[in-house]
Length: 202
Image 1: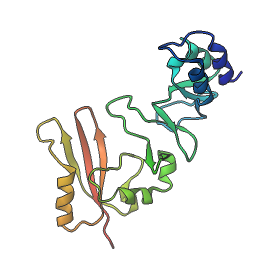
Image 2: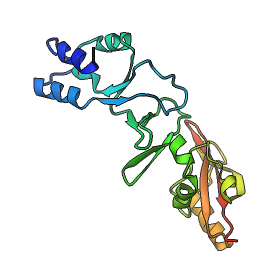
Image 3: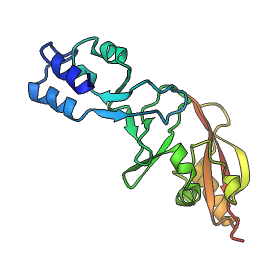
């Protein structure tokens, strides 16, 4: 019994939240998202895969029925699928320390596992941009020729957490650095800790 069949049969019952036309509900079924596994850390893979949709369009408790048949349920506006491996990654934070396990470049979603295989070009794309930073902890810039300048920078609400990436970048360029890379080391509700790296030309 497919998810599409189950959802189609459920349309005789009212939507869980809001009023939707039959056409809108049927369209949601036809465009339901699917991933066979998670690329997001901390999630166990379900027996039959993960379904992504706006579940407000369907009857109450339809998610429990789908879970009974071995599917995991996710919201369509909180998850995307990696264009490389087809596995699911979260796009919406579920805690203050959450950081993306994917990148989006030129509209293409790449999960951490796929990105590690081409990390060098990805890091080069982040160079010399104080408004962008490496947030994937699985990638160590030191393995790609970058030298750590300092890992003690902080920006936040607590006293002393006043480091400005743009000011840091300007000082480093004046000092002779030519390939500067920022990396987020810790993210919380009230502050961010980041490190700064440089890749020597020689």
